Image 1: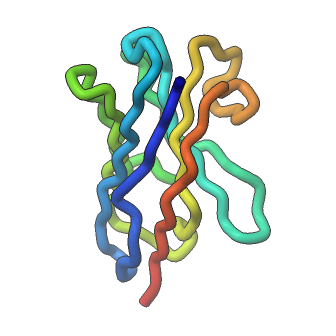
Image 2: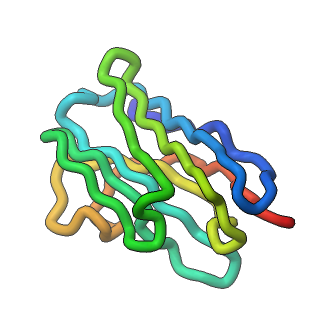
Length: 123
């Protein structure tokens, strides 16, 4: 069975950094695109970043230059390094995987989801 497990969330001050991990199992990792989404209280889930199985990388405009996605095929994991964190980055962060998508930024195109990890940025 497919499982995605996020870790690495926590509370940081403005300008701080966190590194999130998404460990996957039960899927043919090198044939799946894996992305990150986030959802803040009162807001819809939004796209953050995706690392496709072909090697393409995509970022939301709100995180470009601050976040870096990476992929380790040896341990079937995807990572999200978050730097220069802002209060608006506060959200539950989810990793998600899909074999096919028409729009990498559309959450409904992803078939498998983790339970999420909380990121809180404060002063």
